[in-house]
Length: 228
Image (tube, rainbow, N blue to C red; front, side, top):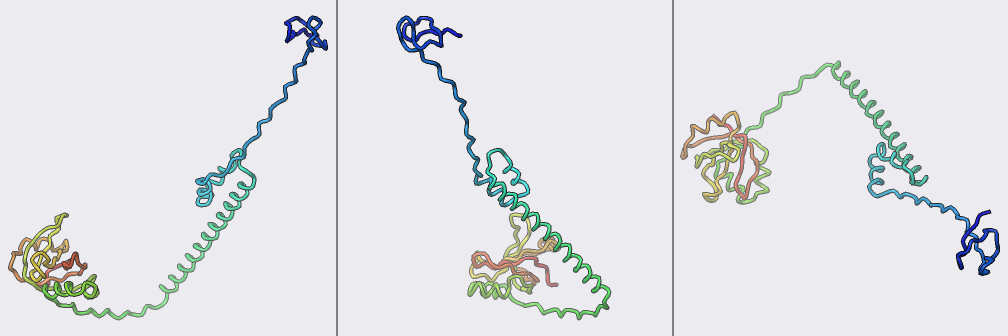
């Protein structure tokens, strides 16, 4: 039997007594402490984890096994992982099958007798002067692109200047532009860059070039080489 102190007068009294024998104050028994149960908050699937599971399920689905994620989110994540693995397996099987068909077709084609193909007929080059080229772009850029852009043609004109671009590649301007600031430009190909050193303003030249459109109505050509 333990002795406790009276809360009113401070006298020593038995914990089994109903009241203090000195002051008559009731002796209150201490309530038993009840354990506090901490409820675990369920962990929600964050936006970025959801995106990771959707895009890279093979990696991010395993994050759903961390403590706190619900059974529903785990089931959804791993079902999506299984479907992704099935899709990858099916794609690999399809690729293997198509590769086998392609190889068998190539073997069949190689074993079949080859019929000689007719030699391609070389189309004559379109011939134009630098002035005609500049006038075509001045009249209608769209129509001029359809006629010259990406196509080889023979252009003739008088050299106005010999320059280099910001990469050090030589190019010529030929007279015939709408004004002196819009003379057609012709970039030489690498194999014929040295020929630019032999040219002078006023010389008449013929070049085989590929059209590359225009810049502000100034015709531009590339991969040019002397026609001679």
